[in-house]
Length: 307
Image (cartoon, rainbow, N blue to C red; front, side, top):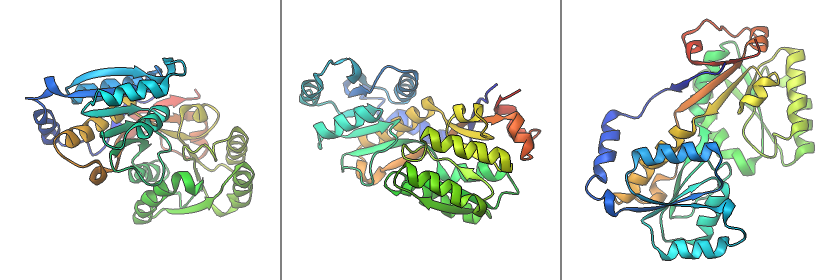
């Protein structure tokens, strides 16, 4: 079983109404190029969420099907001068940024977008709001005191900074372990396990190598300490809980960003926004071993794995 969407701090209804009014008179003339990294379900759902909120004329380009002609496709796209480019996924984002510094770009479902965005770029992170994640961790594990995070500063320093302030405010101390490669990741998990009573796995290519995840899941089960993961597949392998992105909601958030830009806002003043809608997966077997209370109201909306 898996949980339905959980929405916390939903966008005000007034904002949604205002967003739709911004383009109500001009939607017919608004051109948006939707640039896909592929045709997988997450991109499709994010596009649907975006298009539902932002009325426009859309052109769709799937870069996974251009057979080596990406440069020419991007030149043609830029020459058509859309009002905005929607980049769905990392490959689309990189292609769009490489093709223009003039046309506004809104990205969604991009994991690593770099430390500094170009001036014409804003986006909706694939990551769930870090502060919201900390509040959810506190709700699931009220006795947790020291939450270990193994991370690559080049990829996820900004996520850790946003999470740390909220964690401290609710009595949870983040214990950071910066690493640069797999060998450092494994060493951090081995040497740090006695300094923490739980692990938070960030979506990070450096730290989510299979060997490292296998180790931390095995040791966490032996020591009966919780692991909060970024994907359902880790819950199926023994992690107690995972906070999962809601792709359609991320697309809708990207649309709100686009509407602000199309109404005259500067992408550089908007930057990166985090979704406050997520899905929760819980492993019922390992959750009981670390005393997660499965009777709480949150459990009515969760996806359960392991029974």
